[in-house]
Length: 150
Image (cartoon, rainbow, N blue to C red; front, side, top):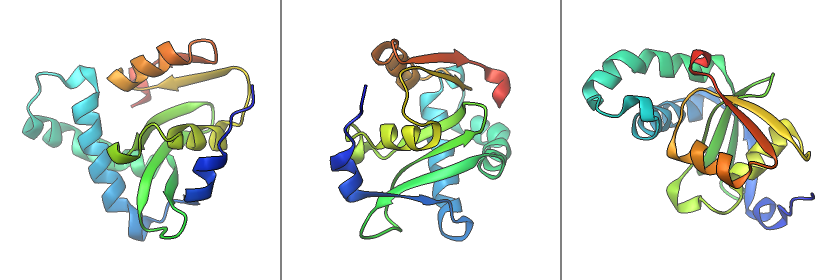
């Protein structure tokens, strides 16, 4: 099945992570989105979460590969990113709320893992989004939950 990413490729540029310009943004959005999205943290206060997870999350940015999706005309405007490791491990995919449903996550994902009929991906946290992806792409993506990845 051929994905049509023509429209998204016109306005979105993929670029490498730049520690100097991207680090704070990636760390803060990752910290907030893991807290808000990962079901295993329901009932944990934000303060307690930050105390226990901030250093792990910051280390995750350093430990993972990161690809940025940004405005093609203004590369400092980040639309989203993917944190990943070689062996089909996705640590996190994030797309800003205003830019969701525009195939940006698909563009990031296929850039890293290629375009094929069937993917096998491991991920660290159960979230509303991983549940949606498993349902929507069940015929194309075999997703394995593995909390030990973090």
